Length: 349
Image (cartoon, rainbow, N blue to C red; front, side, top):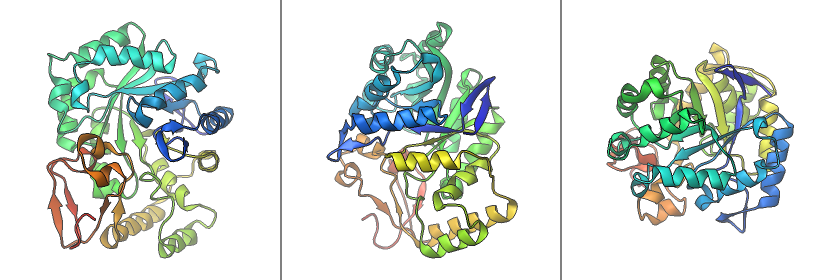
């Protein structure tokens, strides 16, 4: 396992995300404990020391399950991260109540990493509103040792990120964004990385393979990649791309089974960043994918939590791509307010 330095600590370069844990009978809320435990045991044995969860993952059961499993290990042997769900309007005034419940769910006395969850266009005002006192409360918990490191995740626009970091940057230690070779240009991830760097923060990565959608690619693109690196898997290209970005400290992968976990651990057994020729080839493939294919949703269901959209709640949204058509959403997928998405004539579905 590769390790990255963070404030004098060694973090595994690969972290285990718990938004897509194995479930029973396809029910999101019903985590398969035996399979989840097998995965965590394997991860711990093979050097992963970072585990990421959140209040709403698996209907609230992700925090409970990862807390139950990790309770079998010495507290100093792992880093546990979760998030304040102020991205959901009804939670913004409940920071103390939710934080205390998260500690109980996770069976810990402190969190190693704690984040503002998805700071974006529709919630940044609430997160920053003094009447709710979110930052004030979290800084108090940090002072008392119940939060070791404070950061934020975001799917928001660059200007929203800048506004948040202008206000709170001196108290933030890391920023978590959706970053992969497809989103690097398409959803301005490159600009976000550059902005985060300006504030002196390391980058945490979510959706490195777009929810598994970049684990396989069209045969013609796979052939191009294989010609460049015969021994590299298609998912490996996604992770090697991230290893090529110096600002990236942590890569979170929401692995759903033991095989995915084993494959990713094997990839992260060595650091093999792409050279300039390989980077050019991969970004060229990404441009072609954006220009001619449909980009399915990552299955995060964030949009479904904010709307009554049946398609969103059933993970059936597909964004058709064509350079000649576009549509602007006020409240779009991943809360990307006012971001322009190219669409084909058929529209959403």
